[in-house]
Picture (tube, rainbow, N blue to C red):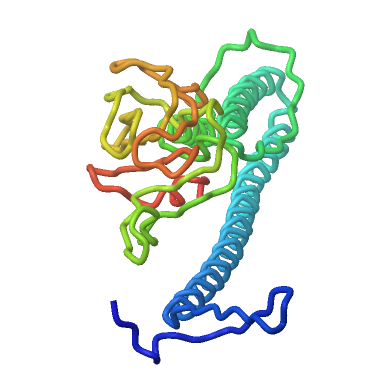
Length: 293
């Protein structure tokens, strides 16, 4: 093959005898390829740095959301405490009325404990409230409008917390977010990511985020080993890339139940949990369901 002079560069090296130089000819386009490789490497380092900064920002945002949640719940508890104090003053004149109030207080406290249990299973802080000691349970309950109002509200809140997906299927950092992102399998292309990815190791437990019924278990294309759970209001949660499935189709599950283990099955670049929330069959951003807000 004939080589043009312009395609070659020369470098003279001496080996032992200076009278016998050796000429090493290197194709000029090899140098150009090396320059391109260095440029791509620098670009990847910059992209990785930007990704790390974005993950830190997302973590900070989540902390702010949890703080706001605590403020809302604390405000509710403050209202309850104020009404409890007011009612105790009013009903202290009659023992029978006082016993009724204590019965309602017990009911409210039981519901707050249930709410705390749901929050802790989701990795959220518990509601802080002052327990009132009650020792009388024999009083015959009658309607008390004030306490009935709070009792109905808390009962509704208890059911919604239990049945609506909320919180984290596992407590760890995010590795990918909802929306368009770079395709990890086709460099330079974008793809739509319909959920959140949580960092994990193979075998780490994956928890159910709400009460519901398992409607699918098994292989599901790029999701690998997958579990789908149906909840109220036509909401579903999907858990993908599992290494092991702990539940069966038709099974009723509740908040905090371990439904599988982290893996890397299906279309996956490494061990992690893919988590989706779907409403009426369409994926929505799971961040809307990570807290009570």
